[in-house]
Length: 344
Image (cartoon, one colour):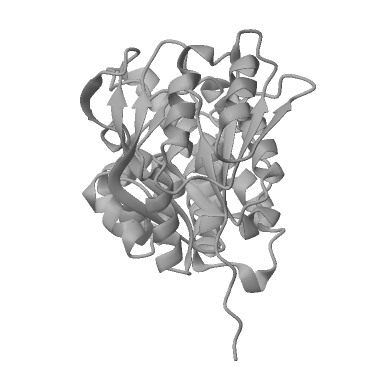
């Protein structure tokens, strides 16, 4: 008779840094989980406030094991989450931010989604927005990103391309299978851990989502990553320059992702890996278009079928054809221009 697989165990990976102001509320919400974690792994990034004493006090009374690791040096949030993930012992890993509040069903809902569908490698959810005082703000987390109904349908039907075109996966809402971390390189470039994890996992398994808001996502002045700036008007010259620099910036970010994917066994890779490679080739075509508009026509024509799915359709194609272009609008110029942007 086939053996019954062992039950899933859940690790929560919490990264902290001077988070004492809101940490107690988050820890209380972990204790209040309908399906409590099997362990809480904390990596503190050299906090100088009361964060570590709060964690130690919580560990003494928590209903689950709490393991606290203090980094020897300040690593930054992206590397810190990578370290915390690799210290987890559970078969499922959920990331946790220090300043949010979890719904009591945060862990059970994500674990159920992964348990119901063995083909899912990662799942993430929506969230409510709250302010410093914990009061609800208008809208929900997904409203702040490019994750509208059309893109949700694409993800639902197995099209993973939006994961590298837009940054809508929030790490504080995700859970993934620990068996996949062997092939997850540390995030590189301007990637944050959440978008990087989701994109890498998509090359080995499907990524799913839960419409239900499973966390209260706090918006405050001290947070390292927020919901991003709103739309802004730009003069034409700046719009032109950002059009070309932005395309090359994204090309380089995908190149870093492909470097990680190449270490995966070919038999493990999904169709998303090839699709991401095609997106890189598409962006390379755009960023190497010649200055002469007439000489762009043939190349654009050969990629015309890609524009609706890989860019903004005819609008992007028209801009690629008509906008003036300089030779210094690729390479290091793109990295320098967007290094502080860190889009999600």
